[in-house]
Image (cartoon, rainbow, N blue to C red; front, side, top):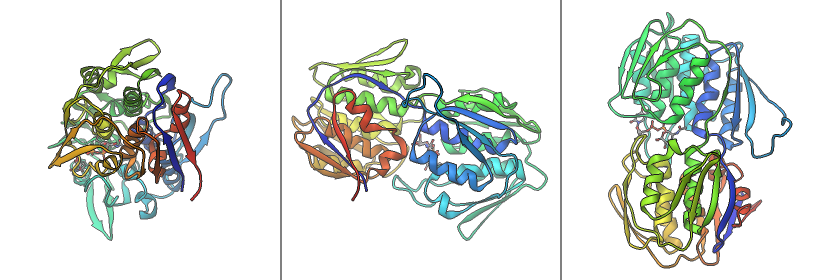
Length: 430
Ligand code: UD1
């Protein structure tokens, strides 16, 4: 199993290219199930989660081609993938595949919409909380599907096709919004999705669906209005930049000090994070090329935040902000409102010398003068990168074990950071 070794203390200067968003690429790939045409996606990040979803889609009969590099394209630009689901060969998504990645459960909506049936394994537990799928199932039932749960599988049927419906979610869920949207575009009649998640990745999927012939109003808002169509065509679409990767590298620079351009980052998708970082005394400027982050010797001011659905502070940046605040000049309060049990990084940060106390859903982070390197364990995707951030300033050597969590969501992390002067190395093997 690979490990990452960091020797702390180096400032970061230069440019970090931001990859396509994992959380947009995954549902966009799933959208290919909705059409017999070819969906060409560009700027697809090279990540373990993308490769895993590819296996799942291939199991349903999706033919996937990855175009070679084009002239002028460098290794940091994402893949171009052509996905073509001429026929759906199998409407079952088996446990062995779905259990490896929760988002693969999202094939339920498109399979049901296109084939009138689907059998999808329940995704099971997850390191960051119980993460149920009741809202996904409610949406499918509203659209006219019959749902049964047998032997760990959701068995969904809509032999006469899905029917437009009024779906009012009682809380905001990214996955359930994707499910409702992907299923309703091929339903008979109009659908209204109220209290929809308005994360930029949902807007990206909706825009791609419109290119494929779907009729959707209210894109980027919390009320989506869908007029069902009988079929969709292929299309070409480029994945938006990853706002969570952007926020993560912004915090790396803020922690280590220095001056870095996050190339191709979209500041409009990251307002809540940028506001908090500026409040903490970090230089953040939006430029034509991306976002410039700089900190040169200023103290870090403590912060007080609650994670919230978009446009609030994203839960996927909570662990990274906490790592940064371990070195603030004072006490920060960080409240997690989206997922219970998303504080597993706290124990690992403590191994590096952080002073963090948990009070229910709130972490009290008392800034310390110094962190010191130690072996630590990656526990989930975002938690693991928080250890990288801490390692950038920890005195001595920090070794992060179980980095397969990082590889799920960060493309060539060690290359991107070392190109800016960090001492970060991947150690392959046992
Ligand atoms: C997505 C993101 C993940 C991010 C999360 C919140 C992807 C691939 N993953 O995950 O990175 O952290 O949004 O921004 O895009 N819930 C229910 N019932 C349901 C569904 C969700 O109660 O049927 C709850 C969850 O337990 C959680 C909250 O709703 O408390 C939000 O979860 P949700 O937005 O659905 O997260 P995901 O779509 O799984």
